[in-house]
Amino acid sequence: MRVFNTIAETRKFSGQARSEGKSIGFVPTMGALHPGHISLVERARRENELVVVSIFVNPIQFNNTADLEKYPRNLSSDLQLLKAAGCDVVFNPSVSEMYPEKIERHYDFGALATVMEGAFRPGHFDGVAIVVHKLFDIVLPHRAYFGEKDYQQLQIIRALVRQEDLQVNIVPCPISRENDGLARSSRNERLTPEMRNAAPFIYQTLLNAQALATNAESGRIIEYVYQQFANHPLLKLEYFVVANSDDLQPVSGKIKPGSFGFIAVFAGDIRLIDNIKLI
Image (cartoon, rainbow, N blue to C red; front, top):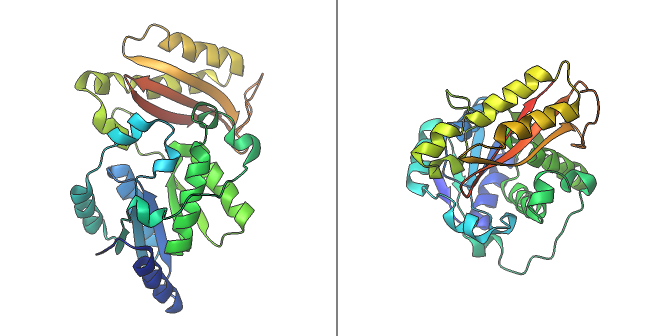
């Protein structure tokens, strides 16, 4: 497994591989890898001749400086996990390597970027689109793999590919969960034991909302979820939204096929997101 720190050597590797007709699977990450990330790498390994993983904590997608500073970084253990998973190349650039000049590029994803995460994290998806577009230009992948836990991000990246006519196939991958249902996330490392024990309540509430969806309208389901978190001693609900799976716009009245429930919860200052298909 090779580790590259510069754009030039990564692009040279990918360009040579493409000239030889080899397929490249790409998994962009911010490090602090967990089994969910590794499942993406393993799928990329099965479906491509070469696998490239990026490890880059992207500062421009954080609208909370403290969250950026506290984001877990475990490069040594990350590299061991990636080597064991069959990764061929790791691209681990510095911030100055990725952004040597002032960033001028901005994107407009319309209503897709103004709901849920877009409403609570202004500028977040612009930062995501900028770094993903740049990574695609560097790695030159045939396929790129993204987990469905960050479902809105997945839809933003699909929109980016359409807008920019990028020649990369976006491969969505199911949410990876712990045995107790908690969606795997690098931020879980920061949970105290007490918070970690409480966190599966998020997924259990989503399952209960899913069970209600066949007979209840969206307003009733939203009310139910807010009631569940109203007096929780450790978890604070930021939002729960019932929305269409394609354009992510809110669903009112009867739940339609393809509707999802999207949730964001704080455990202390640690923000956890999850989602579930309701019908």
